[in-house]
Amino acid sequence: MDRAFAAALTVEPPAVTALDAWRAATAAVRAAGSTPIARAFLGGVAADRLGFAFAGGYAEALRALVPAHPRPLAALCATEEGGAHPRAIRTALTAAGDGFLLAGHKRWATMSAAGGDLLVIATRGDGPDGKPRLVAVTVAADAPGVTLTPASAPFVPEIPHATVALADVAVAADAVLPGDGYATYLKPFRTVEDLHVHAALCGYLIGVARRHHLGDALVERGLALAAALATLGAADPRAAATHRALAGAIDLASDQVAALEAAWAAVGGDEWQRWQRDRPLLGVARAARAARLERARQG
Image (cartoon, rainbow, N blue to C red):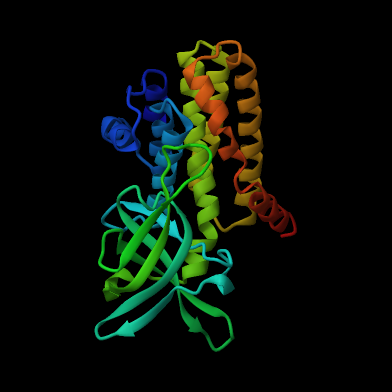
């Protein structure tokens, strides 16, 4: 993170308002990071709004989850009408010749319309133990049979959401990823996502403190928190100890937000107004994080 920390003290966000433009303008800055966590952090530093920071962190979380995939992944598509629990997955992958067909519907997929491949969680029926056999499959967002229907949220308008309809989408054998769809991909993703999105948030808050002259202490605490997240980024995302340490880091991030807001409110301005609009994003998945921590504490 040494180079990322140095960049955090000098990088300024581009004057753009669209996600595609932000990605293009910050590509070189983000690519300077040596790990997905570092790139997520640098994306946050180079953002002037929470939506851009989140988008950068989310993309790097997917890269960390599937590092061997040759093209950018846009979104993890798991949630269906009954949720994202293995028993709720109805999207099915069935054999067809030398490959497969994928059919089903995903109710809500964050960033699915942002360009790139989709990582789809599907079922191949129940195993001998009666448990669902889930797989992870990559498909192009513009592949025949894939239909994205935009959906909206009341905050962070830069982040696209969509429902995803899959009508007998042809899937090559090598697009079915190795490992169990739940244990290898779906279950750890919340942890991987939290790590990378909070690294991006950390970078964003450092940028806010610098741009609005809110005090060196806020910058330095942000750098310390980013260093902790970078260490956790190398840990096992399935381990209870990782979950407990991550919960502590998220609490520290909340303290950093509160300290920054206390100083930032007096400054005001357009960015402050955007922050007020988008701040509810920080509370999304709070219940899931609390449940994860409780399980980790129980061992």
